[in-house]
Image (cartoon, rainbow, N blue to C red; front, side, top):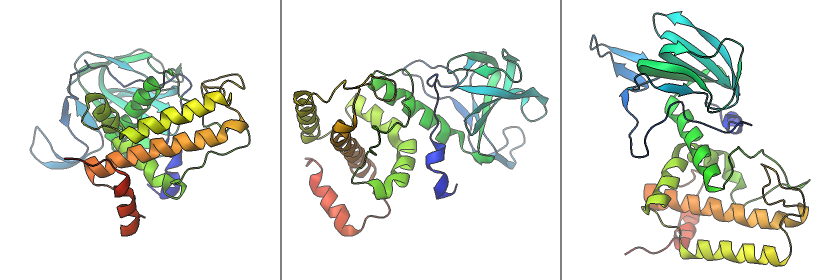
Length: 283
């Protein structure tokens, strides 16, 4: 995927987001055949698998976001199938037992659109190019978790504060950081929840200090709150948004460095050393 397409890969959905099928909280994703070069379970021969097969039998299948049904039918590869288009993403649900939506119907996240058969095949195309479905599903899961943590049931729009852009210290690496988040944000959120990663105490104290100052200056609810701006922030509070965004990105990068030893590729050794100084010391 060309770098210029990174921002385009972020999926917007007025109806929110939903995984294609539900699992119990502690249930693992039951993948029986992965994406890419695989061995045919029947013949043992190598072949290129354009999707992922899940051991999901006779389960309801859901619309992932706001979209439209653009295909359905029966063929040798996918057996019975239905195709939903979400923005620039086209998702094929294959080997289904029945479809509940018809061609051309608009769908919303969480609507039951089909039922799986003996298993479920999922393949994804972005803007006409084949994509590893796990990259897409990781993004959807991250959106669900992030919005739930914010108490928002719908995806925020990419709204500016009036005519003010939100700027951070990491703008030069924003495309790469976006792609890192697509892959690792679910792990980051889960490790925070389970305690495998703990944000440094200065992160929490800085957030508290920012919100305390903002409240004293009456930054909140200067305009009517909406999904994209739940605190009702105005142009006057743009510095607040800048500071919070910096803190959130810095903590995510701290997680990437401490738990995965991954830095933005543009950083030189001095930048890495300077960033390491900020990280909490471990025993």
